[in-house]
Amino acid sequence: MSSRRTERLLNLVICLLATRKWLTKEQIRLAVPQYADCDSTEAFDRMFERDKEDLRDLGVPVVTGSDARWFDDETGYRIDRDTYALPPIELDAEELAVVGLASRVWQQASLAGPAAQALTKLTALGVETDDQDGVAGLEPRIRTAEPAFEPLYAAVRDRQPVSFTYRKPNGEAALREVEPWAVLSRSGRWYVVGRDRQREAARVFRLSRIESNVRRLGRAGQYVVPDDLDAHQMLGTVGPPEDDRIAVIRVRTGRAVGLRRRILDGEKPVADETGEWDTLRVRVGDAGGLAQELAGYGPDVVALEPPDVRADVIRRLQAALALQSGLPTRVPDRERVEETQ
Image: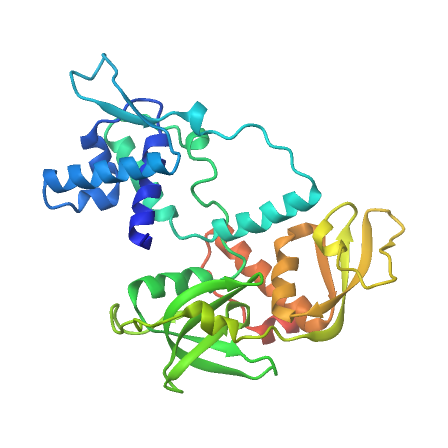
């Protein structure tokens, strides 16, 4: 299934979940952005019927009915929430950790814009939306810990070259110009695959090593993604570097269960005099990946050593604070961050 079709189906689900009232086909057509692009009513009818059946095949209970107060003989549509909702679920600590990681990936999806647009259009049409309960969990509300993710995702979508400062594993940083082909994840790390203009060859870049804002170059649609591209195969050739250094971390008591599982063999957390914090040591493995993980724990974790990991955590938290505050999302320079330590 193409990404455009997937996005259209998801927007249709959000639209049908956004209200407890029955929606006419015309309201749905005006609310879902992709339907508004149909050239004729017949084209929309065909697309909507296919999408409706696809959702039902996927187990989404799209039902029909009417509200006599404002429907005549026209059929209305909505999703049966009682059938669609999951029953109560109980998860153990390990399962919660997995769900947490999965939610981070979902929160990074760039579908919030079209989804919000659909809800806004419904409201403009006089339909009372139920966006707090109806689509909870569908529209992302927390941005990714990787500041480069969203602009790179948009650049891939628009086929627009970008530039950014990239740090190699040996610490060397340089400006790169890239035609991004795909953004994907492997072993908990995010990468962008594309053509490096300076080297005139395909390259893989890890997002955690991008140390500047991602800047777009020129106009959209400047290049074509190779038809034979196998991004996952390219990513499979990238071996995660092993950093044997030891990280010293303060963790709030009872928090960061996943991090505690990686304590060095034979060691135990050391509680402070207040009993509110533990100090533990873990192997770095990948400095950027560890910094991303530690930043994700927010105020429950404080990175102490090594200095570059601590600086990277602070840099990510500052970028997240800027996003939350509505400030310009400029990624602080590593040198300036380290000067504040």
